[in-house]
Image 1 (cartoon, rainbow, N blue to C red):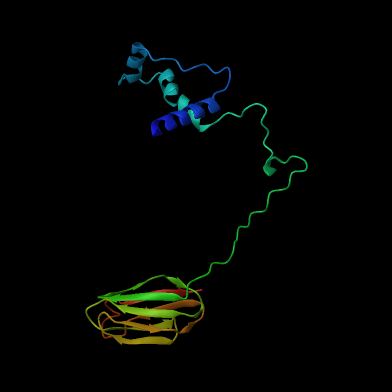
Image 2: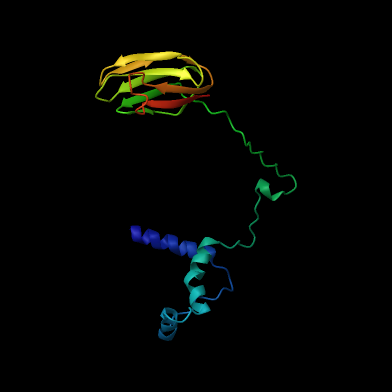
Length: 187
């Protein structure tokens, strides 16, 4: 059943792309097949054209006589003008939640950008040591912190963050120097 459907679709596609007056494809003889497969000589033009002619017909259907395109893009009198396309589009809406995974010796953010306002920052300690989290705007003082969390524990804080870049880090001795810091952008 499936094979019959495929053959029907293929036959229909060939009928729709065939135009009257088009010559049928030439059959390949043994001599022409030998010429086309020769390795040292360049391929004759007939061999090159034959390999893509049927595909070209399938790719570019020819317009059929008597059919008129009445879409608005044709500019016919009385046709409505196409709607203008907006380049800017709606402003993106950013989430106000970010999860921070703490492990030895890095911090991984669930998303690099959050929306301004009250943001939920969640510290997930996946490491073997205790970790904490401090948040401060670049060039500013600490605005929020999550106290030390034991391995496997989760801590959360909900500071109000304005637009800008914020530095997040673990404040335990040597942890920030070992790589436990990240940057969060607030828009």
